[in-house]
Length: 340
Ligand code: SAH
Image (cartoon, rainbow, N blue to C red; front, side, top):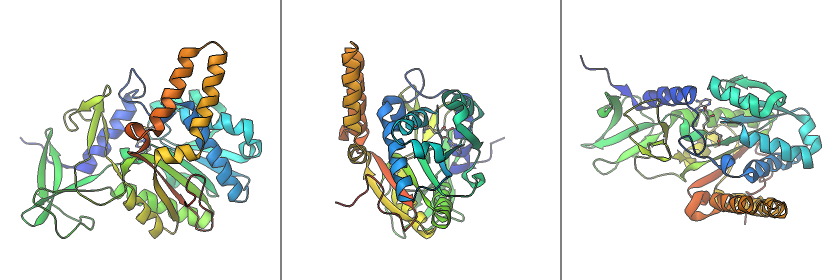
C-alpha cells in the first residue's frame, strides 16, 4: 500500500514539532548555533532596544515582554541582566511571557530564567491583553511553508510521500504570479502571514512593538529555500522528519504586508549587521573583550570579538539575516530603524 501524500506545510509542522520536542539542537554538540549562543552582546543589545521602545510607548506599567521561540533562554537571560543594570524601571514594569511549543525547551528556559517567567504559552493567541514588546530570533524560519511548482502553465503543489516530493494540483492556493517559467518554485507561509497579521492587530489595538530577526529575503522571486541542517551540515529535508532542523527563508515582504493589513506599521527589513551596529553591538563586545583580557583571559577576549564580528559581517550573518519591526502606527521608528 502506498502512503497518502502529505502537503508540505503539514509535513513541516509535524517534523519541526517532533524535532524540538526530542532534540537539544543548539551549540557545538547540537545541530546549529544561533546569535544569542554566539555572543552575549546580542541579547544585551535587544534588551536595551526593548527598554528604549518602552520609553517611546510612554512607559506603560505593567508591560508584557514576550519572546517567541526562546530556545535555551539565553537571549532573554542576557536581555534581563542588561535591563536590570541600566533600565531598572523597565525591569520592574515588565511581565515576561514565553511562547514555546516544546516541553523540553520550556524546561531549559525555566533553568535559565527561573522565577522571571510569568507564564508559558503554546501560541501568541493566549497572551494576556495589554501593551507588549515582543522579540523573536529564528522563530519565523521554523513556521511551515507551502511550495508550488509551475507545470504546463499552471501551479502544482508539493506534497511529501515516502521521503520524496510528489506534485498534486494546487487547491486553495494563496495568490501566486500569473506567469512563471516552467519548473519555477514559489513559496508561501500562510502560518507566518497569519501570525504577523494577528500580532499587528494586537499591537495596533493595545500598543507595542514586535522585533523579528531571521534569515531571509526582502521578497519576490522564485526558488526552493527549504533546508535541513544536522550537526552543522546540510541534510535531506524529507528523509527523517523530526531528526533534522527544518527551516525556510523568511519572506519579509510578505510579513510586512500582512502586518500592514493588520493595522501596524512595519520598519525594515534591514540587514542584521547594520541593525546590530546601530545598536552598538561592536562597542559592547569591545568592552567585554577588554574586561576578559584585563582578567588574563586572552583567548576569551578573542572569542568575544570574533563572535560579535560573525553576527555583523556581511560574509557571516550580517547580510543574509535581517531585522523587521512591526509596531503601533503612532510610535516613532524604533532604535536601529531610524531613517537615513
Ligand atoms: N530563539 C532561539 C531559538 C531558535 S529555534 C535562539 O535564537 O537561539 C526556534 C524556537 O522556536 C525553538 O525554541 C522552538 O521550539 C520554537 N518553535 C518553533 N516552532 C514553534 C511554534 N510553532 N510554536 C511555538 N514555538 C515554536
